[in-house]
Length: 388
Ligand code: PLP
Image (cartoon, rainbow, N blue to C red; front, side, top):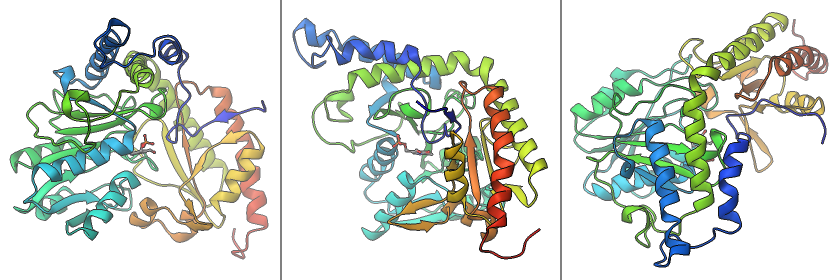
């Protein structure tokens, strides 16, 4: 395989070898159904419970029963919001932000078409939200506040502890999409009173197609996926045992490596960001510099198309991401950067690099060497006309 510098870890991550090892038996000889009465199937149930304990410990949940396994982060988000709306059918108002992932944003937009009222809170030019706007948006009809822990594009961290407290005082369910935050910031649900928290396996060196929703013991919840009695009757469906075991291991490793590796990741991210901003003119950081995930940087390069940068990076064996989503052939500028008011000439040329514990200084040095000539070349052929 050709050289790969993988710097797109907010999109997905490599499965840790230890995670793969723990999954293998469930994909080969241990294939029984965990709901079966006989030992061959039923004994597998305890592997699910072991994984549940690991996830609970990682998140600081007081009781493993507060963890419900799902099929992905998107399902966790949908289960949190729809499960809450089903629990409080008389309440018809949702509060969220303009910077959420599509798993929340598109769901909220859909809920508007079926009679719900949604407040989309603004974010400022640094991607931060205003708690006063949140407070003044709450009314007696508010069923749920759903605000992401950290933004996937910029890494900006939202004031979730304060939001959780505001929601607690007003007796409103608070959900946070922590898909990007889990494993990258210290997590302790004993100190942070969120009611519902979403995570996803493939963002923290676990497998794709598995996630979890933390449901605080005191939080009322009606199932989103209606079916059998699995997951304490909160989610029907035969458990994806291999991936659940993998998620448990991934959480255990994320907890273990957090203090050892996160400082190193942040140093590499800072070097990458500082060097690129220094070497490349007309470039700007998108998002608050201090208050963000240690692995993420989002840099706008003025007057060029992000997709062109990505293609040229790809030719050099570098995987990164642009803020734009390519839908049905048309290039839609990032809704997050637009909500932040990033100038259009920078939005189009915004690139996200997101690191993991598997990145090395050599990777970063390689990007720092390869990107500046790419930007220069693209600017020379840019259709935007004269620039410096
Ligand atoms: N929420 C956030 C913040 C994300 O970044 C993602 C994935 O990119 C999701 C939710 C969806 O997670 P999944 O891909 O597991 O459905």
